[in-house]
Length: 241
Ligand SMILES: Cc1ncc(COP(=O)(O)O)c(C=O)c1O
Image (tube, rainbow, N blue to C red):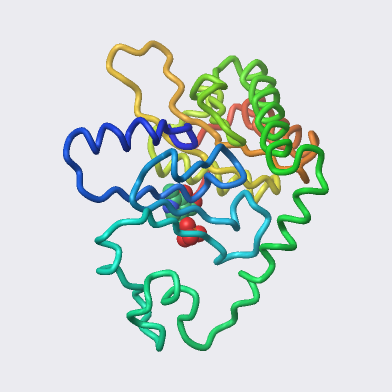
């Protein structure tokens, strides 16, 4: 199920217990959305984008590398004149390019601190709000959330009405396109294959998010669009590619 919180610390431990030598965690969404303590997690490498939930412009990310003897073997894929001076130095200068996106990080930290509770306050309010809105939507559609609220951060999976007839990845994409083109709603839709024994399974989920700039009207717009499709008796089979 996309957007579910993964118990990464426990998984890292499991891998270590099984003798895995090097562990890399791709936590693209994590920073600004959930708790991140890279030392406590204990992976060899941990990366997260600051342009997803940390208000930075595209291309800003961090890569944490655990101190280890092996680190000297590791190089940035772009070779410039800091080559051989350690990964941190190699990564800090990868030739002549525009570094301005990275330079805004201090301003962004100052910006998030203007909100009550800083980034922790933002995370908590986003989580509480997206769960509340997700629950409003599933109640309306007689479905359920894709995971318990405790396994969500600032995104939740919302079960869509079964009468929409989402029965493949292509149907999910068609519905997403239809919502964008006809209703001005942008929301990722995922197909979930039903299990053999399931009765009236929910086969489509929308991944909704909440950030400080969202208002309840954004979600009402989505709700009303889906209700209109349902009331008009439309199914994915009728949407064009
Ligand atoms: C797990 C994961 N890895 C990587 C990416 C892509 O990141 P980037 O924007 O740096 O290409 C995403 C984007 O959502 C992601 O969820």
